[in-house]
Every structure is written in structure tokens, then in C-alpha cells.
Image 1 (tube, rainbow, N blue to C red):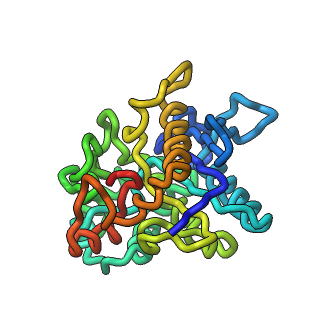
Image 2 (image 1 turned 60 degrees about the vertical axis):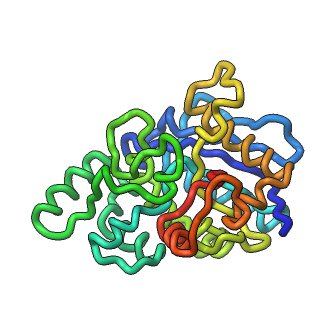
Length: 279
């Protein structure tokens, strides 16, 4: 298996405020195969200090994927710093079929207001109130995915308000993952890893969960903010893995050096997702 991507994009996500607010914590860096460093991408080159909103970033990704595909260039490898699914305990609690597409549809049916002017905090409060009445979708901070159990320091997707938490980012980001998934033009061009299979389909852009802590201690931060640094090291880490050939093993659990997953656990990871590079 030989996987080649034209660009590696690292995204340090943010679940702050609402979907159309510019967020200093939402950063994007990209590295081409021929680059020695990663460059920051801004939403407006004419206003270099303006920050991305989640809605703008989703539209930008659509444009980048379409342009790449139409020009017959190598596809993109996009790493996003938030989980793409929830623990099995969530599926069991709400009697959801263990199917990622069904999960996303159900999630957006309850949290869909996050594509508008509603914040994660406001929606969480609403869901907690609904939970007391009927079927509000909330989780427990003690629920952890298999990937979180096998990594060092990764927090539960329901552990809000603590340092290093990805709960708000995950809850805010999932509605935009569904936006990309169901987009009539780019949806068919994306392989969401590992939900669409452990081995990415040839010629498709890959969207995957990443964890900057796998790399950020080994690359100098320089004068960057922590959010910039995290996005940059992801782009560089993915590019380096592709150049070295290590990336191919990351897509194949049977080749992992440090983590062994049983057949049952592999099936679980196809529902809960996995962190690319956690191997």
C-alpha cells in the first residue's frame, strides 16, 4: 500500500462561542510534500489578523477538497484536534445502532443548533434540561473511548471545563463533520478514517482525528501561541510520517508497534474512532 497526499493540513479546533465567531483558538497550518515547514492558513489574506470561525473553516475545506480533486492533484490529509465519535457507552445509553452515520444523524438532530448562533454551553444546558424530561443527549465524564484509554492524557469527550479538554471542540465540531459527510459534492470525495475503513480509498481526501501531544513536545514552539504550535506540529507530523513511510503503518492496526487491538476492539474503534498516529 502506497499512500501519497499532496498537502497535510493540521487543525487545532475550538468549541468557544458560536459557529460564526472568529476564534483565536482555531488555527490551521498546512505542509506540502516538498515543504520543510508548515505555513499558517488564514481566512482572509487581506486581513492577516482575522481569525477563522467554524463555519468559515468548513466552507474553506469544501473549496480546498474540490479544487484539489478537480485539478487531479494528490488528495489532502486533514487532521483535526477533536474526536469524531462518542464512546460505546453513549450508543448503549441512547439505544443507538453501532453505526457512525446513524450516530451523526442522531447527534445533529439534538445538537444541530450549533451550526447557528448557539454556543456549546447554551446547548449543553438545554440538553441537560431535556435529559431530565425525556431524551436530551448528554454523556458522563467517566465514559471514555478505547483510544482515550490507550493514550496518555487524552480526556473524555464529555469532560468539560478542564485543561486539555476536547469536549467543547468535539461537540462543536461534529455538526461540521456531518456537514462535510453529507455535502453532495465533497462528501463522496472524503474518506473519514477509520469509519470508512482502516485503509483509505485511493484518491480520496482523508479526514481523521489527531492528537497534537503526540508531536508538540518534539518540535520547537518558537514565537507561536499554543494553538498555532499544535496546528503546525500536526501538519509537520503527518507530512514527516508520509515521507518516512510510517504513515502507511498508522492505517493498519496489525502493524502497530505499541498498541495491540483484539478483533473485538478493532470493531469498537470503527464505531468510536481512533487517533491517527496512536499506534
